[in-house]
Length: 423
Image (cartoon, rainbow, N blue to C red; front, top):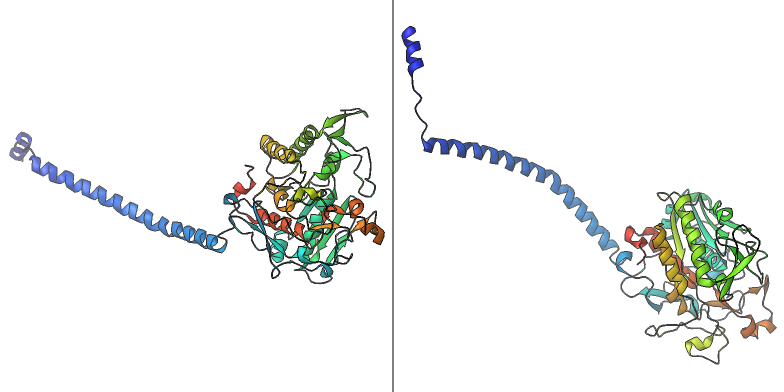
């Protein structure tokens, strides 16, 4: 045993040849590479089907709505196309909720072509308005229109559009002051209108007594109205026509009964800033979607469409067909820029629904002399004097406000967050 130990102790290690070392290194490297390749292959086998499934879903969605990409299309630019197949979207006589202010056929208008025009954007198409789909969206929720009588015009339009999918007797409608409510029992859905023509508080806040010559606003006070807006899931605002009585508007001084007369754009910016800040701090943006409808034009001067002998919008039966020449209907577009700038500056999430240009083409769509004045239908003598009595502000229904709601519908169902960016 001793001899063996001495032999082991005195044994010298034979140096390993370079070839052997190289072969061993190659073997180890091969094993490691094989393991990495196996791991990478497993990862790809796990992830690839998921990525492929996502791509297929995206392609399927794009094929179903290839032209409904609000981020890539300006819905406000286009032309009116005559369409007596799919328009009107409902019949005047079948929508029992319409008020006498907008039922032009019932009030004596004989031509009906104003109901048969469809808005066609230049580079896309509006999605089909599906009343049941919107009702499902509104199930257990509330949509609230806030603004003036033009916004009420749009509210009535939406009620008629929704009513096409509601069974008779399954919805209720109540006109009130300042709140009017349409309720669909089956969906537990409400669509309401709240009267606030300046959005902020003013001496014109009574919808039944607002014909006030000296209109005065409180530009920093909105909470009296806002308390009625907080629980809405969808808010649709407008504020325009009440600003157009003159170049200046009377604005209360802070904490004082006295007022100053301020230029319209300056006062409008103050009010919109108050409104945007209220939205920013008082609604749950993960729950509530807010929209602002741009200016609805007035067709009071027929010379604006090269018809100086006309009587405002009275007797007009066709839209303005020339879409290549910029229109000038007296719309104060400075207020649109102010709205965009305020939304940007405050960072509040508001979808801007631009109805202005498309509505400017529609000199034929107003209630004209087929409406009410101070709660009563115009007399034959009044109808014979359209220069005095024609209403070229509000719109017949069915009609132009239905298109506004098609645009609103497109915004609501757009999955692209960029549709809320103001460009």
